Length: 74
Image 1: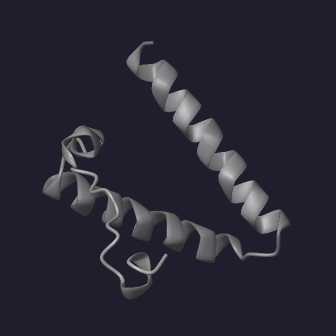
Image 2 (image 1 turned 30 degrees about the vertical axis):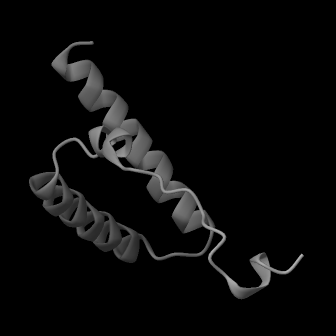
C-alpha cells in the first residue's frame, strides 16, 4: 500500500464515519470536533504506551480463591 493509498482509504473511512453520524442526527461540526478530540486522546495514549497489545500477554491472571466464609461449610 503506497502513501497515497492509505491516505485515500483513511479519507474514505472518515467520510463514511461523518456521514453515518450525521444521518443518525449529529451535527457535522460536532462530529468533526469529536473526531479531533478522539485523535488527541489516541495521540496521548500512544505517547504513554506505543504498543498496548504487548501488555496483554504480560498481565498475570490470578485465580479466584475460596477464602470466603461459606466455602468451609459444606
